Image (cartoon, rainbow, N blue to C red; front, side, top):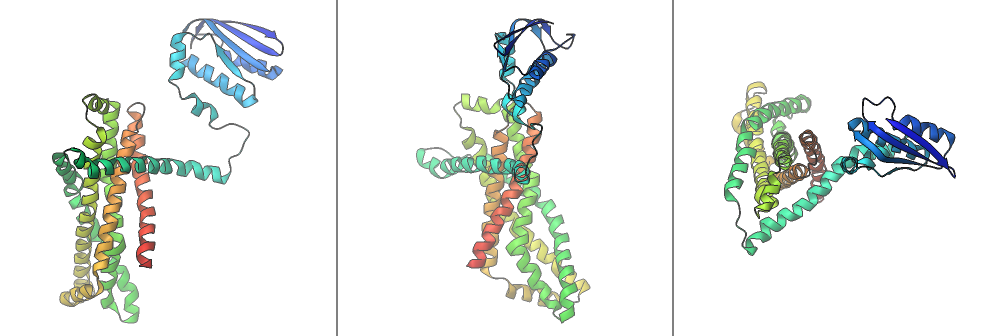
Length: 367
């Protein structure tokens, strides 16, 4: 690489000729750094004589522009070859150059925003996608759009039926744990039989739908995000659009409806498994007759307990399915972005589930 520096009226021009790659003995950044130390008002890099470049040149030029911005001195690229201009256009320069500016400590509020912004962005995308799902699922049939029943049945099987063994295992253990912990406290007051009330009410109102939704988010939400993200990367989603098929109607609506149906059904099944486990533990360890335990459970439960659990489960399922699909369809870049989208889908889904649970708990408590 050869370069020539000219100065005029407080600004400097650096003309680059030859090759700018890993074999070049010198690079642009040290030259511009020395000019910045001199205090020039502007630096123009003339790339009209550049013969070849590689990824090292891209990094060198981007870091050079970043150094100028850090010092408050504009660094401009002039007469760049078309190939270099096209390569630079593929780089998210704004993100690279603005991140992590030296000499400025970030406030706790800024750090909190960096942590929360991915989840909030996922919620935003999920909200707009949910509007499209509502339009396609509810209003679509009135426009003559046929529902995809085959895909819906397939998704229900993947999300609900295939998750039954995991739910059985988790809630068998959870029912025993709840009964054990409750008995340790209630035994002090001679009210061991009230273990049935605590296990039944806590499962149906809160733990059943909440934990089931979290399990589904980790198991099926991540799978859906990875599936759609892979389809985006492999351009299958674009192929659907070229065929005149709307991706939301074909791919997203069956998944969201399946999540909305599968999660409350799994939650109801999980409640039953947990109550059975609590009954077995109470009969064996606490010597509470099975009939007495079930009678106490029947007296403790109200229709509103089951209703609130089913409503929560349907809402949690819709949130999980929508966020997972939004993250999958929002993948940009290569296959490595699929893993990041999958992680964001799980984290954002759990965040949304907790927020929704807090809202429903407040509403139901007020009612």
